[in-house]
Structure formats: structure tokens, C-alpha cells
Amino acid sequence: MTASADTAQARDVGHIRVAFFDVDETLLTVKSMFRFLRFHLRARGLPDTAYEEAAQTLRRRSAAGVPRAQTNREYYRLYAGQSLTDVFAQGRAWFAEELERGVLHAPGVTQLQTHQDDGAHIVLVSGSFAPALQPAARLLGADQLICSTPEVSRGKYTGRLARPLIAEEKGRAVQRLLAELDVPAEQAAAYGDHASDLPMLAAAGLPGCVGDDPDLVAHVRDRDGILIPGMNG
Image 1 (cartoon, rainbow, N blue to C red):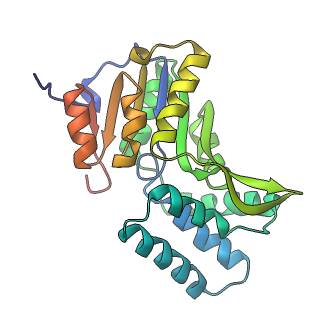
Image 2: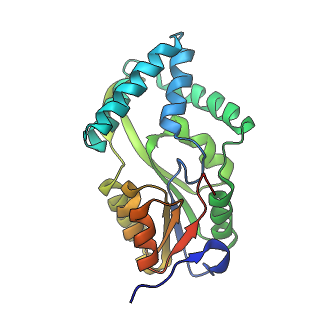
């Protein structure tokens, strides 16, 4: 029998010891990879057309059916030759600007804080990378950040991706960390907004969907999980 999902407000999550959260459009109202890329290219003195061309190429390839893992790798090629120190500094400046615009997604952040209040270990899991994510992780008081890791050589990005973290990789990352912490899946929760987050949600006993992605909603309802309002309420 298919169970009905609860709203976040209706569910007691006190038994959850580890809570995993996707970031973009789960805790933030934006896609950090694209928003930060625009900021980064401007910081390099490039015109806005440079961003538009790069973003359109990635979106066009995605629409044509190119696997998300491949377009993810193509995204990180755009940082080839850039200083690690400079990109992290840009990440801090970018996030400060986004905060002024109201970048935090209140329903997702409220759920994170609920788990924090219950003493859960908070883990952010994202296909984005540390320069764009660390400021949010620190602001939200996350205990751990697991994200894509671009390759670095002599203090500069090579343009290659050392560790991707999307789709199935998210699920494996959740499983590995739970094993390291000796926490059973039944005492873990995972929240996301997109079908690519499904492996992560499937690895946790309590799944949560932010928004109305049909694949995630179906999974959450089937697992008696939690539904959280998305960008459109």
C-alpha cells in the first residue's frame, strides 16, 4: 500500500542522526553553478556574452540528451588555469551578494534547522564545488560538505574533474558516510529537488522532496517521506 507523505511541520524527525541536503533549489533559491559562473567570468573581465555562450552551450547539450555527468565535466573545464585562491575569494564575494538578494530558501533551511535542533549531523551534498558552497555551508552551520572536486595542480584548476558528485555518486557518497559514522539508513534523512537526487534519497530511510519533481514526489509518497514547498510554493 502506498503511504501518503507528511508536510515537514507534521513529522517528528527526532530519531534522525544524519540529515543530508542537496543545495541548489533545496536550501538556495538559485542554481549556484550557473550563478557563480556568471560572477566568476565577470571577475575575469569577460563580457556577459561569455557567460551567455557558455550557459547556452551547456543547456543545449543537456536538452539534446547529453548525460548530466558529461555536462558537469564540461562545466568545470571553464575554470581551467584559474587560481584556486582567487576562485575561493570570488565565491565568498558572490555569496555575500546573493545573500542580499535573499538567496536562502526558507522552507528548506527551516527543515535543516529542525534537524540541527534535534542534534543531527548535517551534511550538504552537491554537484557544485566548494568555492560556491562553502559560504552557505558555514552560514547554515553544516557539519560536513560533500561536493564535486575539480582537479588542482600547482594552485590552479586543470579543467578536469577529480571527483564528480551527481546522480548515483550522491547515493554512494551517502552510503559511504553512513558506514563511516556507523549510522543505519533508517536513522538518516535526505532531501533534494530534482530526479538526479533520487539515489541520495533512496540511500536514506527518510526521504524529503523540495518542490514538485514528479519522480521525487512519487518516491517520497511511496516511502512515507516529507514534502517541502519549492520555489513556487
